[in-house]
Length: 74
Image 1: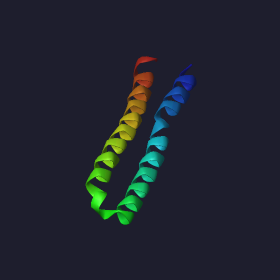
Image 2 (image 1 turned 45 degrees about the horizontal axis):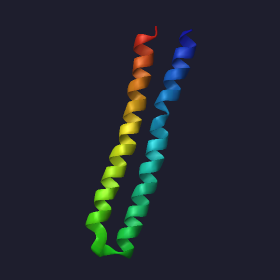
Image 3 (image 1 turned 90 degrees about the vertical axis):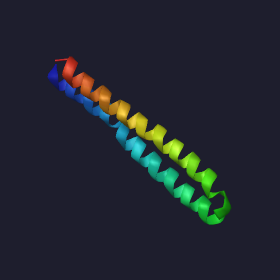
Image 4 (image 1 turned 90 degrees about the horizontal axis):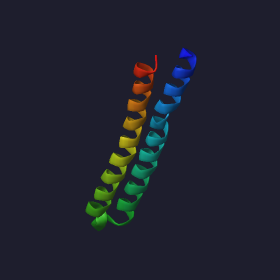
């Protein structure tokens, strides 16, 4: 039973991989957009920060779920 708990926690924590990839893609597209249209950099930065915050929150939720699985399902 403890092996299944560890597997479940590992799967829950894997959300960090998707968040990291998403933040990397968003950052690259934002810098590309700023290079093409520098006068819109303020609006691009706002959208980038909001998107990165949401992606990071998803990773944190996955981490918290992983911890809850390990701590409370023993």
